[in-house]
Length: 326
Ligand code: GYE
Image (cartoon, rainbow, N blue to C red; front, side):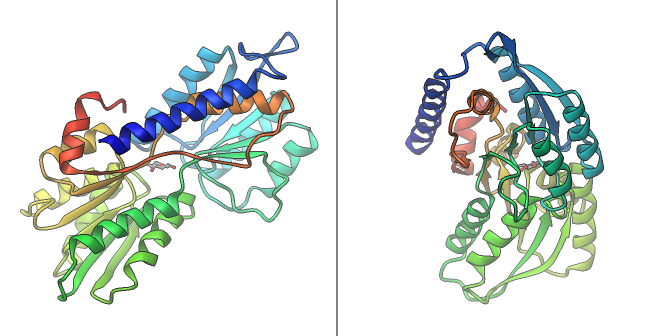
């Protein structure tokens, strides 16, 4: 618990530090030389509990900061995000903030924003581009680190055992930064020990419905599953239904490692159905608005701002549940 308190203190200090610096050129009420800031925000979609909490955090923070937010939901489609960004450029917003659904394919539209002199801030997910002049800053989690934390838990859990550990993996949206990085971080850690085998790995698109459907298929095709590694809580929660319907005990017959740390998952953990949850913090709104103000005021901003987060075991999740914000 003390780790968590420390983490939130660090996060709090970061917000304070950002707003303190931000008061130099711009102003605390979101106005820049008398003009109210307008931010175009292109959100991935509404695929998960994490996403819902993230959207709310961004909308609430904009209101609090006196910033006009033009919000667009891309329904997990890159073409919708590209359209939204083009429309923000046309509307001459002050700053574009966006969470790219996939990593690649952004250079053309981001170049259009650059040519229109509209700064772009990435939030939550990163883009994969050789041209690092296309965005000014990236605020969000370290997904490789999250994957490693998931792997570290597994290695510890099976310490001293030699028989094979069969793992099935529910990947996030194909081509997205969290799916790519959570996979590679996890694989990097477990590959040191040959007893760990990923016997099946498929995308569940970060949703409950897909998580359930793919887990049903895994249960049919795999004779022995020891562990499920789900790239997010919604897919883990869908998979739990599939496991229960197959007459097995989630968390016992099949151990479950998940990522995010949303309330519904903490409830499942307190019932013993998920074994460990690697936290990923969606409450990025305040930091994002501070960042946007600084960018508009022409201040230097860090190229990369990482979110602080931890790992929750079942006991820790049960203790945190009553005060969990999302
Ligand atoms: O883990 C998942 C969501 O990009 C960190 O997207 C985010 C991920 C999150 O759909 O639940």
